[in-house]
Image 1 (cartoon, rainbow, N blue to C red):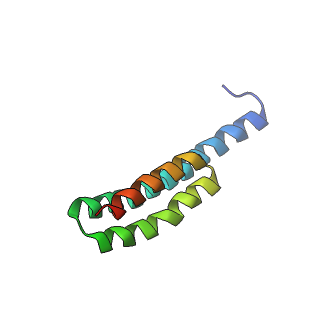
Image 2 (image 1 turned 120 degrees about the vertical axis):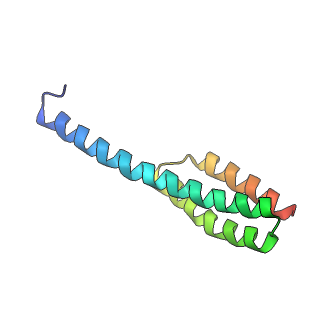
Length: 86
C-alpha cells in the first residue's frame, strides 16, 4: 500500500484518469461501430457520413493519448477502404 502522500495522490489520479480514458475509448468504439453497421447495411451515404463523424473521434483519441497514432490510422484506413468498396 502507498505510504507517502505523493503515492496516495498518484493512486487517486490514476483511478480518475483510467475512468476518463475508458470513457474516451468507449466513445471511439461507438463511432466505429456506427460506421461498421452502416457498411453492413449497405448504405454508402450513411456509411460515409458515419465515417466523417468517426474520423475526428479517432484523431482526438490520438491527441489525448488513449490510442497510438498508427492504430488510429490503420482503423481509419480500413474503414475508408470498406466504405469506398460499397
